[in-house]
Length: 204
Image 1 (cartoon, rainbow, N blue to C red):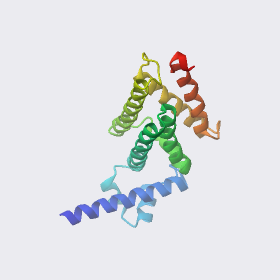
Image 2: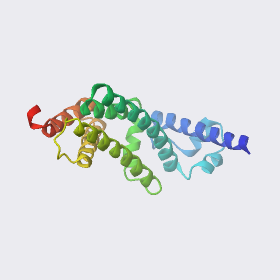
Image 3: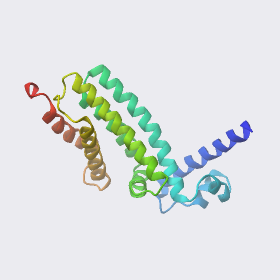
Image 4: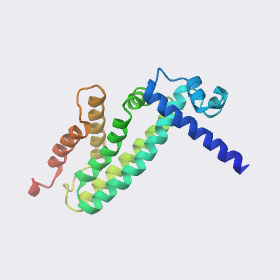
């Protein structure tokens, strides 16, 4: 039973990796269940045993990748906060991890934004939960910064978390639409201006 479970997990992982490669190479419209099955050397029915349809396959491939990226980003941002003691550095490190992921897979990123932002259940809830985790982390970092006197005492850390996402998504969309070649730099400018306005008055 354990061997069968391992084999099933290995097959699923191979299908997902194949799907990522095809989505990046051929785009969402150029990828199909049949083409993924052929390249992964499994039957189309095997793919459908693991994933309901192509959209489900896309969401799974991207969600797993983003989970890995998020775990790494959280660790890096926490280290930046501990070593440098700067909220700006910590939040920039957090955004950089995601921007680096998108930059390595531009076609996949376009598919992500087009398909996942308006995903149907259960993926809509899973993506929303992922965003909520990142938001809570940003709020936690902001709370630590406030306790150190880096921010005004009346700063709403939950609202700062929402501002982080507004800057992040705006910079990401500008990049994907070809309006800005360096989304991280754009994000940094937006974030810096915002944090300058939230710093204690004696530091401005």
